[in-house]
Image: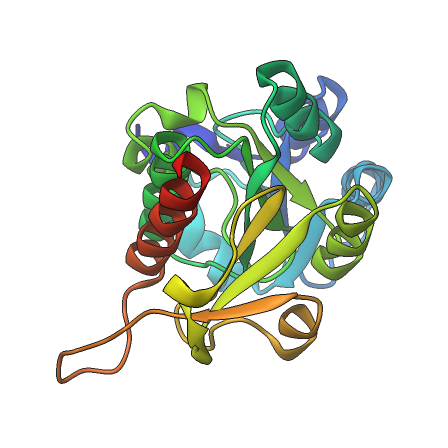
Length: 246
């Protein structure tokens, strides 16, 4: 799967993609373009809450595969997004307490794909990602997930902390990974739980961390100070699996 399979170029092509109901992750529009078709693109994007970025013509020329962008390029999701409700319904169907992954700003598609694969193998019911400052379901993510996207639903939300508040009302507890937290083996990670993993560079943001009930640290014995985000997700996920089995 190559990324260009999910790149849509040209005004009419992007408008048709929106109107056909395709999941569009981002739209890039040439700065100062304000004619009718561009206004239609902006209207359709606003209606669906799609992120719009205004960029220079040079940037669009660099992104374009076909050289016919007409001032607009859209990135379509390789897979359809689920809703948070559908993820919770999946847990209910299986008769299991919900186990979710929440990703706070993962920008590397290889990391996202690897985390979705881990979520599937650990028996998580779904993954929640934010719309802003995070990678969506690109072709690279789909390829790296090694088929897991066919089985593990991914929901995209506007506000991660608001989603966490709503899930707390449904009985979920949240644990995030942080070097300053309590040793993960000492925490009670059973029951309905959301595992929060932060971005590659900055970790979990302050606001998201404040919404977590527990902060877990992974014991480190080496000479460097942190694990890759997808590896940290795997280590913590399997501590949750161990406790759920026990």
